[in-house]
Length: 188
Length: 211
Ligand SMILES: [Zn+2]
Ligand SMILES: [Zn+2]
Image 1 (cartoon, chains in turn cyan, orange):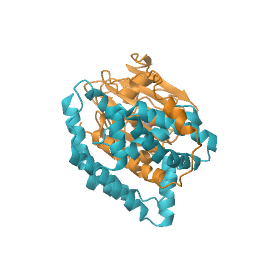
Image 2 (cartoon, each protein chain N blue to C red):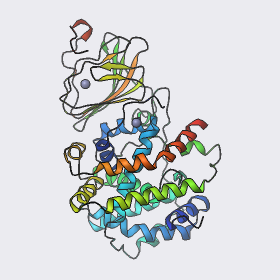
Image 3 (tube, each protein chain N blue to C red):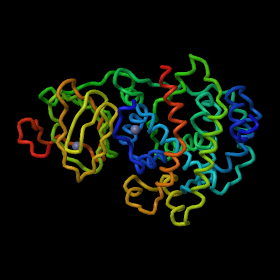
Image 4 (cartoon, helix red, strand yellow):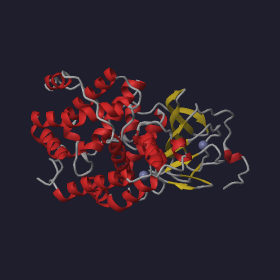
């Protein structure tokens, strides 16, 4: 387990042991980044902190839904952050896909598969590096898209948006994840 | 599950991941992903890209008491949240929009029924029930229309759509969807502008040139 990223180790400690010290570490790592991220959408510092607070409380409360075989900690938190932001700024909740991991609760937690967890982390790392290598203009479009500043039609019209980078990573790397999901389905 | 052939496009997925789709569209997205493991995996990849943007944002120091305030609240009972699960052909997000109740169908004639889940200036989303062989009521398209099949199948000039398939129709698409003969087709359809079934006339009685 020492090969997992710090964030994964802390998140698993929160999920499995309700470890407050590990949660405090997660807070130290994510809270300033979340605040900076949220403020990029033009949100005031005070409102950004409200959102950070809601996101971190959700991380604590919904830790049982975090599944390292399927999502890296940061992408799980990104999704929570976007939901909170929509909640606060648009006063509506984003419809979310039905959870799969809830189904597992009765049947006990799945066997921890370290190689699958590592694969998910490595995929995320590779994608992040691929995005970092983009030309500045493309990089800016990616940022706008995931900050929620581009609508679907704008993304489609924007030829500079390198969705191909994401697409090829999906094709190469998420085979295992698909396999994992299939096994989850087979259990119902 | 592996039979799904029509999926969410990448631009739509990126916009959904960023929370940037109008509510009616997001409901169709969430429903398709609930039924489609491929798109669930692809959503994760888009969230990883979003996380990269989040992690590379300049950190801004939080106020000194924020952490202590949160740590002090960890023992608070979590607000009660109802989790809606798939029921019959309706995936969790649709059951949530229905607040756990079965749909209230309204007849549109010729056995076609609809149940409006939302109709606002954001757009509209509804369930449609079309008996096998029957046509989808004529309606005006204003912008993007997303249609997800929950039961049965329908066909139009662009192809055949079975359970789990998502049709992405831009306003320039002229289509005459028909439920295929056999089981009734139930689908979830969202449009940007409120959808109007202006002069409903079954296309069965119209000459069909485009199929
Ligand atoms: Zn799909
Ligand atoms: Zn249409």
